[in-house]
Structures are given as structure tokens and as C-alpha cells.
Image (cartoon, rainbow, N blue to C red; front, top):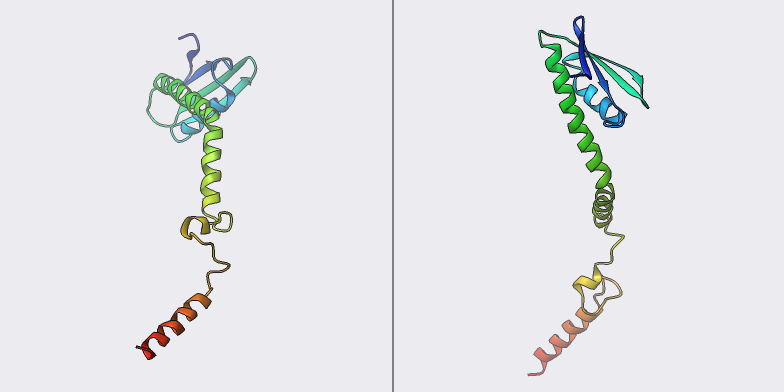
Length: 138
């Protein structure tokens, strides 16, 4: 591959910013921190250079191929995250709003006649008095 070549005990990857965003390069590089020493260089507008030196016996060339796979993975992830940003924000807003009982008036859902307060015991007291009168007058 033209964009991947060995230099001593590490591999140099040349990445076009037209194909992959700098954000994708950072995300892919982060994944490799436990497996390789990662050096980022170059110009974010023209050419990004990534140098990978394995921390173990892993092949530098294999690391290079895997790095490009991660670039594709994160490029797609970032693209989809941007495309679905509004949907995720809307879902989060709805979830937060519905968890605040002060925002929504639920009385419309449960009562045909809207009581002034839920502690309105006056009608109940009248019914109890009327029930007592019926027992006294058979």
C-alpha cells in the first residue's frame, strides 16, 4: 500500500483528511494505545501521519491494517452520530420532561370532572350524612 510503509521497527501510515476526519484518526489512535506507541504528525488539511510501534511481538504491518479498519469504523460511527443527533436530542428531552410530574397535568387523564383539589372530602361527608338518615327512617 502506498499509504503504509515500514520504517525500522514501526509502521508509518499516511492518511488523507479528505477521506478521514481528524476526529476519526484520534478515535482510532485511542483504541491502539494499549497495543502500540502512537505518534500523530502531519497537517490536518493535507496529510495526517500516524506512526505505530507495537508494544508486544505483534506485526507492525498487521497493526497498520487494523488501524485503517478502525478508521473506517469510527468514520462511520461519527457520520451516523451526526445524522441522528436531532433524534437523540428529542428522545432525551422527552424522557427528561416525562420524568418531571410538575411539567404535565395528569388530571385530564384520570378525572372526568376536574376537582379543585385531590383533598376535596366535602362530597364524601354529605354522602355519609345522607346514608345515616336513610337508616333512621325506614
